[in-house]
Image (cartoon, rainbow over all chains, first blue to last red):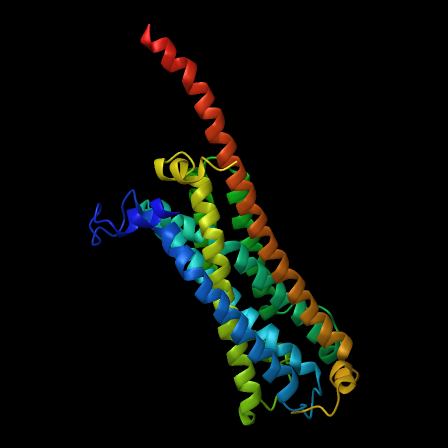
Length: 257
Length: 68
C-alpha cells in the first residue's frame, strides 16, 4: 500500500496532535509495522520457554510432572488479569474522552483476554483434578477468574451485538469499568479467604529452581508478545470495519475484488 | 535435561494425560484465534471491494442525471 505509508510520512497532520481524524489510519499503518516483530518474538520466546519448562526443568518432589501445567497456566492467569485492566482502562478512556481509536484498542484486546482467561481456567482444572481431587471448587481465586472470563465474554457480546459502534462502545465500556471496580474486592477476598480453604498448591521447588522460574518468565514474555501481536492484527480488522466509509479505506481497499 | 528418552518425555512420568491435554487445548485455542483473525481480515477486504463496486455503479447514473 504505497498510498498508506506515504500519508503517514507526509507532515499533513502535526505529530504533536496526538488524537485526530487521521489517528485510525496511522494506527492501522503502525499496527501493521509492529505486528511481525511481536509475532516473531512470541514464536521464539514460547519455543524456548516450552523447551525449558517441559524438557529442562526437573521433576517436582511433591507434584511430580503435574506442575508442568504451570508453564501455560500461570502466564495465562497473569495475562488475563493484566489484559482486563488494560481493556477496562482503554475502554474507560475512550468512553469519557470520546476517543474512537482508544475504544478500538479495547475492542481488539478483549477477545485475546477472554482466550487467556479461558486457558487459565481450563488448564487450572486439569491441574486441580490430580492435585486437589476436583475439576472445580467454588473458591475465591477460581471464582474471580471465572468472573474475569464472563466480563470479557460480556464485553465481546456487547461489541458484537450492538450495530451502532458508539452505543456498543458505551455499553461495553461501562461493563468493563464496573467489572474493574469489582476486581480489587475480589483480590482482597482471595487473600482473606484462601487461608480458610487451605487448598493452596503444595510447595513447589520454584524458588530454588532457576529452570522453573526461567520457564515461567519466558512463557509469560512469549505469550505477552503473542497477545500484543494478536491484538495488533485484530485492531487492523476493527479499524477497517469501523472506518469503511472513510476516504483512505475506500481508496486503498475499495479496488480489490 | 530432565529426560533420558523421547518415550519418557511423552509419558511425563504417568501424568502425561493431564499435562499434554493442557498444552493441546492451549495450542488449539491459540491457532483457532489466529485463523479467525485471518479469515475476518479476508472477509472484510472482500466486503470492502464489493461495497466500492456497488457504490461506483450507483453513482454513475446519478451523475449523468445531474448534468441535465
